[in-house]
Length: 258
Image 1 (cartoon, rainbow, N blue to C red):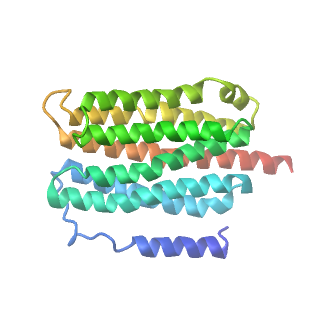
Image 2: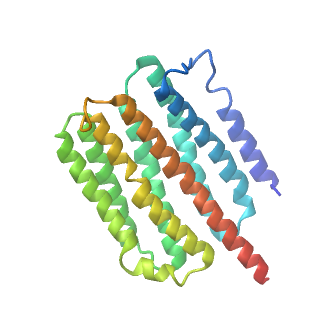
């Protein structure tokens, strides 16, 4: 059951989120698939944030920080998506700066989430966190420099991909993977799910970047934004859902032992 504090917080967030968009302020054409994708992503981020806040009280205490971070990721994304959606509808141009501001906040939060899972396994270190954090910032900074035209697009793409590849290497190789085999079932699930998100989910972003640079034909900003929106839904909403599922499995197992 929800405690009064969680219920109050959830209602407050819902009231703040409600009324931020309307048919009058944000007209949506059913023929504009990019706008539709923005709207779907916005709704998914909102719903996920409320869900994670509500479910936070239903998992074991050791998982509540992870659930809070998951809610922060989707909550920050929701806030930025309301502006990105309106920007697209009004200007018919890619909300480049707004999107990268969002990523500069939410991607490090996801790295912090992965660090929390590693800490639960017992193999986390400050040095590992800063390596993952640094690689994520390099990935984002060079992505922005390439998309904004301040650096050769493909050179920036290559550096960003190398930074992402380093993150993939860190999560699939070394002591972390071995240690995860000895962890609880819930922690093992969380570790596995997050390696999949960081590997396959994050791989969607370089694909969207290439659409924007015209690698597959003419420059296609519509496809770039649709792909980015799909990637955000997968990597933020599904990311949090996987953490929630792992937390419920671990919590149920702990309760069964009592």
